[in-house]
Image (cartoon, rainbow, N blue to C red):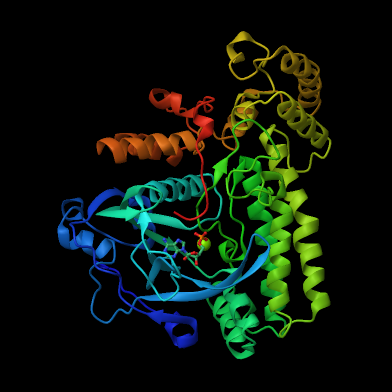
Length: 490
Ligand code: AMP
Ligand code: MG
């Protein structure tokens, strides 16, 4: 792609891992909806602004033009969906161009999502629509800027083609980059096919690329798994601390290197409701906000099961216990202590954030804004905050809580403006509320107006800043905006 040199080490694993194919052709002229210069810089892609809109460049950016010698491929994987074995899945609407190497020697997968059917498409059309592509484009950037490990998006391109969903919708291709797109489901695929040789090859590939320090260790498979347990614990603790609900934590949507991957019917908490379900097809609430830490563990068990040919079961179980279960609540506690302005080690603060969450839950306070407003010096009961703390019940509960909080902060010498400045760097003002994504989508789809997408991109790119002119984009959803329904694939 343009000046990037593409390598394809994954192809060396053999044809059981993928199918080589080209993207399906798009008949109409693609249109660039958004380009993420930060991501381009990160992977070392240098396209001058004057060339960005050129037809040839757009064709390269969305995979319609592939440079000589590069062989795109779709990967096969399997997975458990909603707790049930789903058998073979795979890149059904995504195609990997290959990997490029950035200046810092990191390898980046480049993948086109929505580029047409592959042998793993099952009954799908291999296409993506602008609506869900805008959601992934914005959310992966929002997560990155919140400091949460994630796949990222380089650009968003309209294909100008109709895609049939419940209604006819405009199509798009999202060009996604990531250090890896390998999922727990890749391992499940080979394990469930009794293919131990390829299972080992896959594990070696992941270790060589992402955990090279374990490469020569006798216990390399266990070492990687332990690290992944730890990374997954940190990841999900971070999700919880910003109120992110993934929505479809199937094993095929869990990353083998601990990233957030596959943005579908995700949502951020509005008011603090631990039982919030963001995916309308998740009838039982399997993937509700408060279930995510538990589901992370369920998924790690599914992966551990596949590693049994290489690692004793007891060691795998011990890793889940020690490196995931025992750590995740501690990681979460550290983040929550930070959110109320306390030190990492301040375990006395736990009572404070826990009771604040109880109050927030009982009185439906906005999860993001209550932490953003909180200060060791300011009185939350001041009328200025009435919009967030609206009920008498909430005000009463908060009165006592705030007294304890201020006393604690004074006792540890943290009742000062510097602490508030630090709190503002961990408590975002802007998160990608569904209504923001929806506003950007409606303007784009209905009026070809991309200015809202741009404004939303701007605030989520700097979520800890004030952005006075876009301040309304930090507002909680109205009753009507809460009704936006989201389901699995689209
Ligand atoms: P997801 O719910 O997005 O994780 O998708 C689950 C599986 O369905 C994956 O193997 C996807 O590649 C596949 N899939 C989802 N949407 C489509 C589509 N429109 N066309 C083909 N395959 C799809
Ligand atoms: Mg998926």
